[in-house]
Amino acid sequence: MRQLIYTMHFRGQASPSAEHPKVLRTASSGTSCTLETVVNSAGVETTLHPAAGDLAFLESEVRLAGGDAFEGQGVLTFGDEGEHELRFATVHPGHLGPTGVSGLMAGSVSWHVKGGTGRFESATGLITSTFTLSDSGDVSEYQCGLIFLAD
Image 1 (tube, rainbow, N blue to C red):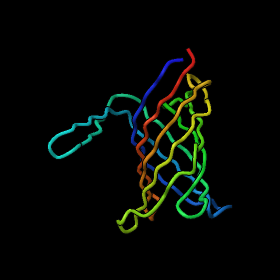
Image 2: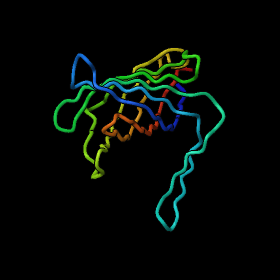
Image 3: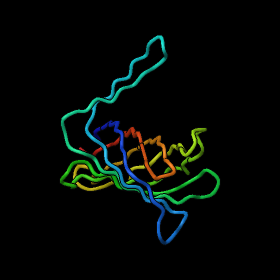
């Protein structure tokens, strides 16, 4: 198996399901980028720099499980052609709670990769995500993936 690591920033919208008020659907996209992290006297600073390449598209559906917990699944598509998809589901319930900033919640979740299509057909691995969700449904999500691909 070959190891692939990625880090991306996705932006998009979340909206409640018309059928189930405790289900949120998200749709977002992320651009190709490079990540620069510098440790200095101020602590740590990170900058995302645009890079040449296609977009990635993220769609997920999560069920609010009470309190600050949620569970769900989703699909991550790399490239405009849509032929390389990763499917994923929660490892354990994710966390979503207040930030102290009015109108903004923050969360984190670990996703287990459940295969996909194209180069990800037999993929396994983990994706970690930290994100914010505004009262108006704006989502800003940072992902780091550790993916194992069949040779």
